[in-house]
Length: 342
Image (cartoon, rainbow, N blue to C red; front, side, top):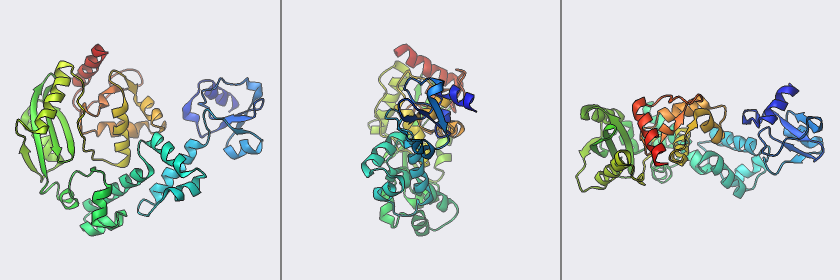
């Protein structure tokens, strides 16, 4: 086992973070396997299964890799997940993690892409939507999810349901969604939006196919083909210029609709720079979820807003294109277009 641990330290393998810690006896510190510091000589190292063991040996935490911090963040996330329907304050999280409220707020957002409160709201929204689909009445679903009142759900869901609770349960009944279709360099493209932002961007080979995608997502909504002078018309024209002519990607308001984890994945994708390519494993590792490669890839595949959420920048570990819900030729063309601009 020590040979495996030595190899993990030498390679700075983040997959072993949390599985063991190594102490440098000459400096009196203990580190995570992925620590960026120059590894010590093997004869000066000792391995520990837990932080407590390292501390009992008289070692202090490394200031560079900060061992245990990620574990405490996982503790916090687990605490929130198990009490999503309850009121949780930063002081509550501070008590169970021995971290300051300010530290929790800053580090949790850096690791998860959202604040602890937003993370809890995402879980509540997921539970709320599940309750609606299971047939619960509106008020029952609201209280079961922990929102407390009808007004609180609108304050806290951050636009991620895309419609009123009643409309969502009825497949979008009564919700107004505008859409526009254009011909671009990659074929036909449809963009749809609620009054809070773009909720769908799809590619297709026919208008019929694209409209079917939209109506399957919101089967009972009221659809309006947008007017030429509308904001949505300007948005899709700007996106077309980006795809077809290499213009700067437009900054368009998005209306994300997914689970807390999916939204976190999509927000990460929006942070990947144009021309940068990552593997699914690299994406999961950067998100602090090195063991969740499949879950991350699945969330990528559920992306409903093409290009504006650039899931095309994620490849397989061997450099092959992997999957893309709108076809590998489109994925290849998007990557090539960004590479030429770079």
